[in-house]
Amino acid sequence: MVEGLRNTRLLHTGQVIVDLVMAVDQLPRSGGDTLAHSAVFETGGGFNVMAAAQRNGLPVTYLGRHGTGRFGDLARQAMTAEGIRMALEPDVRSDTGLCVAVTDASAERTFISHIGAEGGLSAEDLARVEVSGDDYVYVSGYSLLQPNKVQPLLDWLLALPREVAVVFDPGPLVDSPAAAPMAALLPRIDIWTSNAVEAQRFTGTVAIGKALQGLQRLLPEQALLLVRDGPQGCWISRAGQLEQVPGFKVQAVDSNGAGDAHAGVFLAALANGLTAGEAARRANAAAAIAVTRWGPATAPGTAEVEALLARS
Image (cartoon, rainbow, N blue to C red; front, top):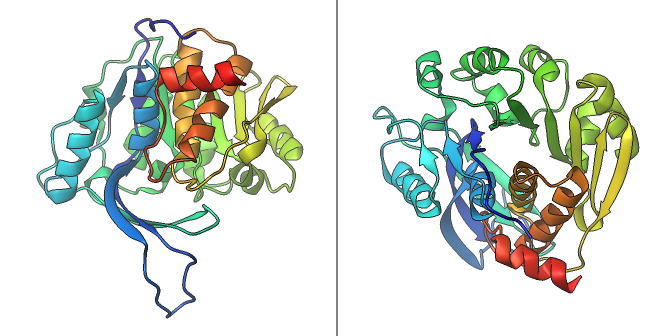
């Protein structure tokens, strides 16, 4: 049972955008066309991780920018409804960005994104943030690709007190440790969270075990590694101690946001003092529930996670 958390917070430095979510039987070929079964606007991107953490008792503050306009309004409404605090005022120069998220009949999803106000961040923005030693600071690989954000963010991260835990999610676009921003961040990563494909691509390997070994060589010795393996669950590793945490059998309809649900619930459980293995089991349960629902921010709350664990 997860009890009330201490003063720990999740400080999310990534990007909240709005998803145009569509369901299709299959993607058309290049130049083709198809009809979607449904289409709806949902707040997504970094919001998915934050909502998962907040729903499981870990208070969240969004450190990124959010725009002025239709999509910025949607993003703020969603964060406010979840109880997520926003550290910055709306950016009057541009709107929040948009992602077209298409899910096919196999439950796989395809993204096309346009970055808006959330793609910028300044040293002045970050200087206003007060960080305590119990906080988790979440960093998205997408942020390392934003020219108007990456350097102030890196400078701020590298100046944080060492007791602050830095969590890194590479996402699908950061595929190598060689780029200068990534190389600078590697020594400061305390928790790595990704899916297997992302970990394998990043390390140039073709197996999860090899990927975890490669990550262990790249990251600090005591870094905690979490690599998701779809329905099989996930793998965790620290200082060479490897453990597989089994998943839960469900009928998946949409994988969009499942990894984010996993990451947010994992951090909420760690913040409450659970071991990495216990936290990973809770995260597996949350992801299993999330894939049975349509949409990006489908992470369950604490009670639903507890119910699935009790039945298993």
